[in-house]
Amino acid sequence: MQQLYILFALLLSGSALAQPAQNVILVTLDGVRWQEVFNGADSTLLFDPMYSRDTASARKQFWAATPAERRKKLTPFLWNTIGQQGQLYGNRQTGSRMNVSNPHWFSYPGYNEILSGYADDRIKSNDKIDNPNVTVLEFLNKQPGIAGKVAVFSSWDVIEAAVNEKRTGIPASSANEPTRPVTSADTVLSDMTTLYPREFGDGVRADFLTYFSARQYVKQKQPRVLFLSFDETDDLAHAGRYHDHLRMVQSIDKYLADLWKMIQQMPQYAGKTAILVTTDHGRGHTPKARWKDHGTKTADSYQIWLAAMGPGIRAAGEQAGGPVLFQNQLAATMARLMGFTFTCDHPVGAPINTDQ
Image (cartoon, rainbow, N blue to C red):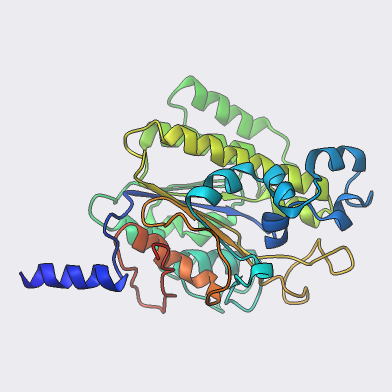
């Protein structure tokens, strides 16, 4: 009786979920600004031939009269599905704010903060150094029924270090790591990973290869926790290729729509899966405000965003106002959505109350 009373009190307090998700998918789009997520294409970049080589094509593909129209052109799954069935945070124009709490405002510190819930100043470069912190992936991988059912697919090889594949044993397929052939489709993916041109160096594979490798793994292994990390959005931005950057954002949105459609046809996942979509950092506002860049020398690149949908996430749409949210809250939020409290030997940000 006492145990039932404690459980009832927890449910009323919002610290537990009545029906937690059985699976969770975390997706990151490297260096994608909140400005594009909530407003769509930026005219100062889209119509500038320095950033969009074919401005006529860029206008046709991404421009519309209003921000609401433009953002749906850019990310229709994010707005037509998550926007209707879940929640979106980070539109500073409506008073919804989300920030990184680490002092660096670039990738590895951001990924550590997302995964460990802790802004650790020891991680202050993008060097491929194994993460000393316990991540929520490692925590979940030790829980009954989830152990051995956590997987990571990333385009950037440093993600292997961010999840500490060596210590945790969590499979982390990244960069140009070929797929282990099981079926003919696996063989094709492995060959493509090996032979496809490496536009951004050996440490990065094309995002479409990351996606299709992950999709194939989901079909075969049905992991309960999946971390899917895309990278080319940031590489294209650093290269000053705004139109191509938008096309990659749109492509990833299509990947997520495809993945969501597929898993809704699988009993393991249908109606039982939560998805969180976010970024590791923001970037500058305009060409003059260093849009190509981020980090502490680029104003406001600490500003990020979050989209969430699934069990434990109320269908409340785009958020307005509310307290400032932080990147270090995402790890605990993932755990909470699955019915766990993420604890370890370092501080962890409080979970976001997505069910309220």
